[in-house]
Length: 502
Ligand SMILES: [Zn+2]
Image 1: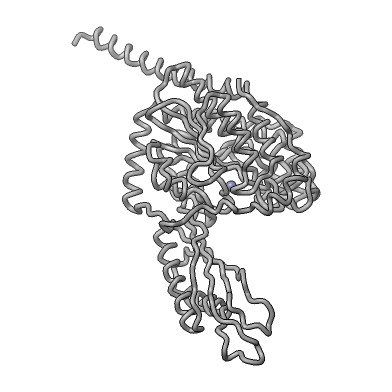
Image 2 (image 1 turned 180 degrees about the vertical axis):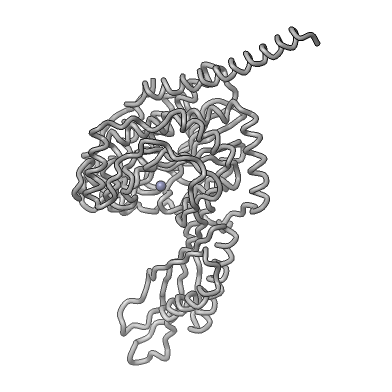
């Protein structure tokens, strides 16, 4: 080959790579422009869901709004699948690659709070509310998926973009059912989406496996003074189960966690109780380890029943695999994080954050001005039921900066900012990184192949099994009474908006 020919080939190749890279940038730029143009719509969705303040399995208004918005944007929406009326799946496009955004939109009991008020001021006293900020997931996931759709159309990209809004994440109650129903069978990769105080991703095991089960003992009632010898005390069995597990604790691996609450401890002292109930959570760093401890817990229940002459039954309540996050996908997400960056917070936003931190007696560090570097996250002992999804399909993870650092979730402080400008601008940054990362997964077969190879190794080391008993059905009555009690008073705060993307 002549020198000139070689040079020409090299030049042609370089130009081709440049134009491919340029094209990738061009696609992402279109997604970013779409998201900027729809920032108000994204905020309207998230703010509307904030004021709905719906508990798990009762996300009726929230999913109605999302269904309307996504259908108007051309998505096919499947509401009510896997036996849960508020389970929402939306998708656009066809065939592979099929990339899904996985998230949730439920609120928490007692979380009602007036936005931006530092002092405790419920909108409706006692009512539920968004004291974690799951409301923001609605706007970010929908806005990002819409932007991806616009890019797929403009550039004629093959594949499908999907969103899974799973019910009742706060009670880790739905994902095993969604997995069992087969929603992820033909999905090539997913990205978990969750609010945070930071713009970050991670890889490896992110949190813990959990199994929640309710043990009910059945005995025989009798008068506590006149004929106690005729009784078989179900609460004795509850106590012995508790003591039995305490004896086991010494012999478990230090990574385990187990906690319980006695949900039925009898009626009054002079009645021998014929029913006693204790609700357990067992956790560990891996599901096989959590399951091993759980199996021992069941043996202890058997022993307690034997000692007291009672019988028992056990009801599966919930379970969650630890989230397994794929390193290849994390690296792709990190590149987009570094491109998009955190919002340029205004002096007012920084001052607000510091004042709020001072009020809440947290370090006055303000808002983060840089994204997190990749790789610094430790496995948390908490659990999220979307972990199950990551054992059947390669998963990435994205946290977007829409809350104030140091303000802990699950307390009312965290309900002060989900509809603030900090949240809104953090949502825009999150939607951009999310859209760009979905575009990477749709357009880079090398990335998807790498992710799949990594997943094949990890899922072979610990093969997925469902914790669901064969006859288990989702608890769709969960939180119904609580929600019905407060919804009428909460309606006055509904925004009554109809967000439409353009
Ligand atoms: Zn959450």
